[in-house]
Amino acid sequence: MTNKHFFILFAMLLAAGGAAAQAKDNDASQKKPGLAASEKQDIDWISYRDVYRLMLRFEKYGKPKQLIQNNYQIMSRDKKMSLDGLHVTLSGKTIRLNLPVDAAGRVAVPLLKTAYDENAELSLNRKAGTYIFLPKVSIVARADGVYDSGDLLAACEQALNYLRYIGEVSSAEKKCTGVKFSYARDAGEGVVKFRAGGVLTPLPVQDVGAFSDDAAGILKTVIYRFFDWPGHGQVITQSMPIAITALFD
Image (cartoon, helix red, strand yellow):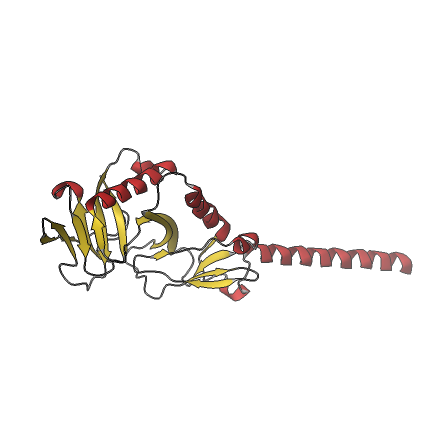
């Protein structure tokens, strides 16, 4: 082989190696934008674009929805695992936000076009595979703590109609039967009462989750069933509940 042929072959190999290294770097950067390499093995995450599309679907929903809200819930695969210390981070090329998680595991995800364009991700400070993200519909809490029975029924129906709209199979044959008010386990007794004709009656507390697939025992839940009480009245909460959710049976 002449010297000329040797240098041509060497240059071709060098160029091929550089292209392969560049392709590998590009592939790695696309998989985990906004995270250091050392973090990738320890964090569970989902694409912000997937969440954005579902949140936008709720925003564009044309039927009544003023009494309900759409959030994401973080649920442990092992229902015995605690949510204490759980953090959610929205991170992209130019954006990084810490999103608070409430005691029911819900996180309010903002609609940010910048995060969508950057293909940002939502990540957890937990080992990969231990938690899952689920969209959840709940009822908007009132600042004054007073809920007319008719408004609660309307809120329940709004939630059920939206679940049917997005194709939630489990809601197909169900009807609205009540509303659940969820509090911390150390909340006192009589936190929720029914008022009719000037009489206040405490509502019973049950050991159930805020949502149908939640683990029991995490929160204290007060259930108001529509047909157990007079049709005209008010539900009075002594303090702001962690979550208000519709009950279907």
